[in-house]
Image (cartoon, rainbow, N blue to C red):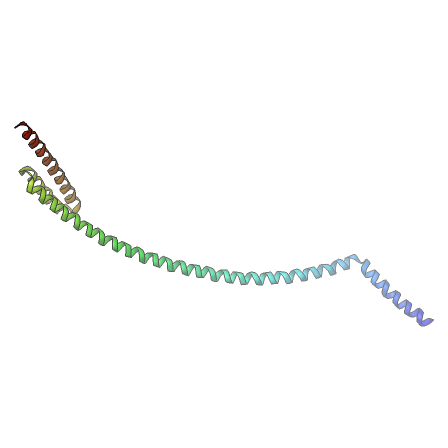
Length: 165
């Protein structure tokens, strides 16, 4: 019986301790707080490690994008230089064609034009040689227009004269 009483007392002591621990809200709150802090620290460490990994990946992607942008800029610059060269070549060819056609137009106009028109054309050609292609082209165009106008006047007067006779 004594043994039974002692065993019962021991069980009762443990039960009382368990009840006291459950009843001690401050202690329970501290334990729960410590557990929560530990879980939060673990999660924060995991998140930090993942973010560092992503940041490293992002930095690598940014560096790749910068390299690609520099490469594309170089290609664009090379293409611009190429196109500019082609444009200069074409402009030179067109300038030569304009000069040749203007000279031909001047020659045609001079061949069929009166003395006054020939003198004007000669002065335009001389001015064009001294001042560049633009003046030459403009003068030649003017001579052509003048020759056409005079030619039409001749035709009209010839038609009128032909009707009267």
